[in-house]
Amino acid sequence: MLLDEPLIFERGAPGRVGWDPGGIALEPAADLPQELQRDDDLAGIPELSELEVLRHYLRLSQWNYAAATTFYPLGSCTMKYNPVVHEEIARLPGFARLHPLVPPALAQGALEVLAALEQALLAISGLEAVTLQPAAGAQGELTGMLVVRAYHADRGQRRGRVLIPASAHGTNPASSAFCGYAVTEVPTTARGLLDATTVADTMDESVAALMVTNPNTLGLFEEDIERVTEAVHARGGLVYMDGANLNALMGVARPGDMGVDVMQFNLHKTFSTPHGGGGPGAGPVAVRASLAEYLPGPRLVRGAEGWSWEEAGPKSVGRVRSFFGNFGVLLRALAYIERLGGPGLEQVTRLAILNAAYLRARLQERFHLPYDTPCMHECVFSDRTLADTGVTTLDVAKRLLDYGFYAPTIYFPLVVKGALMIEPTETETKETLDAFVAAMVAIADEARAEPEQLRRAPHATRWARLDETRAARHPVLRWRPTGGSAEA
Figure 1 (cartoon, rainbow, N blue to C red):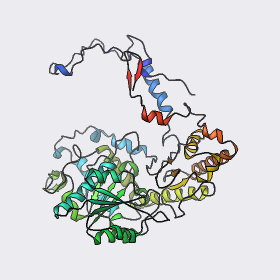
Figure 2 (cartoon, rainbow, N blue to C red):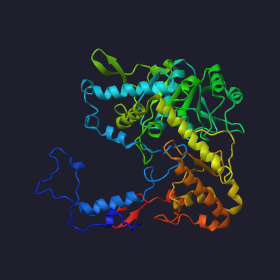
Figure 3 (cartoon, rainbow, N blue to C red):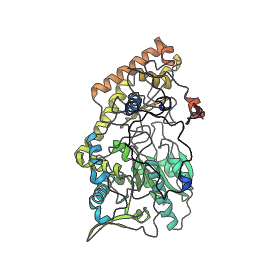
Figure 4 (tube, rainbow, N blue to C red):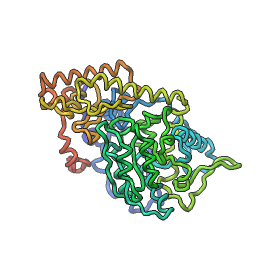
């Protein structure tokens, strides 16, 4: 049942409380500086009962689309369902209540978790050293590129360029630029792949690294990856691999075996942390042994009295995160890996690829397939076959909401005009995929029979189609209690 739900500021009444402290004096601490104390009477703050608060937030939550409520096929982002049991493990008191400043001698269990995760990630990647510090995939990219810069600087080499394929992950150019590098785009072939000869022709001693996403953002495996990495290494460069699409490799192929020197893991995409909503995430970075001394510190080491922290050496890029990282995310990742084991991780990968290949095969006759190269864990279509109807990718995405499905990623990757990127993940059943296919086919039919129906979609959601351009350019970010009106 869809109910109108006012803002929390519009609910309640003066004097209403959710909990009565029973006469307990709630005075500010005596040592709280005056400048941190309020000098008003909290006018305009909502006063509500506990039941009003409960119902308000519960209703808002019921309007959400999420992987726990519906098929959520966002490509590149890997919005898959994560086992609830791992949430329980992360909330065990010994982990959840452990203060980050506790001495290592009193945190041996937590440090054992971190050490075990490091070894697991090294086994999956085929690399030799890892840091768990970075708090997100983008920060992992930044850390990896800082390592690349430190490596070349240590050798007295002034390399100022980074090569990035047109099919690379979207944050790669930003990470390179943040480290002071100029970005050179490397074109892909008609099959959507990197060509080793093209890379070799673009490489010279001014190039610090190639940043490659494999599989790339078209969902295609870089078949020439070993020759590509050889071409980069031949001119003294390093190869950075964005691990955002590791869902299509883990347990089956190791980046280190392909010639990759540095990579980041997106634990919140691949290893059992809910993705989206602003975090938290984790972006560990793994490197070859020759790059280990440049990793952030402190590093975890085992001595005669157990695990402890060792400060970074003089060549380290320095700390990139407070404390050691997002421990709860790291804990979930280890729980996921240990629960599945090597054979389980391989099965996850193969099922993710199978599901994407199934959707590709079922939909390619109704939606344009820009590249006929076999896909990995995600498949990319476009709205070209609907162009004569006036229906666009955005219309298809909005109409899917009426069928009970969240939309796939749209208009990305940028190399495909009107892109629809679908990633079913390994967690979805064939019945769910068939229902999604049926919805997409019905929408394709509606585009020809009733195009206006799509252009006005969605029809069954709490709100109709919103003006997304206006929302982006003129966001309402704050409620002004005193005037009872919104403030941009």
